[in-house]
Figure 1: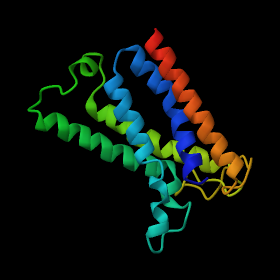
Figure 2: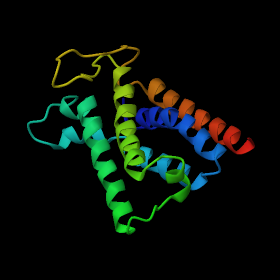
Figure 3: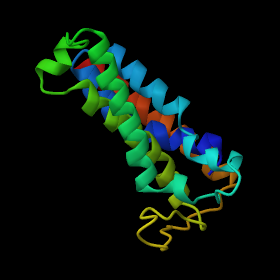
Figure 4: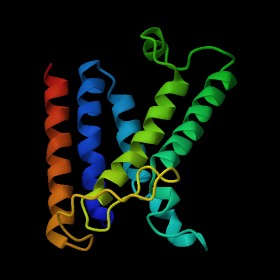
Length: 170
């Protein structure tokens, strides 16, 4: 997938999260979560800029998703520690969601959304790298398909808009 397609898939993955956050009157968290997912939608493609790392190699795996999730989780721990142990988001922490867990989920889910987009193309993705060399693909269309990329973007925007409308309406 190209950038617009990955944005669309990220928005599709984000839509149910937006619904839940808005239903709990957390528009601030919805904005931060959605913005982060869009900002980092192309993160796995950093392999284009790293010599010796093949495209759709290590950065296109669940291991990389876990690594990014761990980095975001560590940032959540650091943020909470910097606040002197005081819960930065008292409402979320009181419901049992730590900043570390929320950070991990956000980081990992952002990468997984990218992987899902690439799995739609014939080249596919090796989700289980380094444990397996198997590539998983649905092979629905090529990565450069304008119809697919713009179509996914349109569907993602629609899904997020519908989730936002319904989340606020509740």
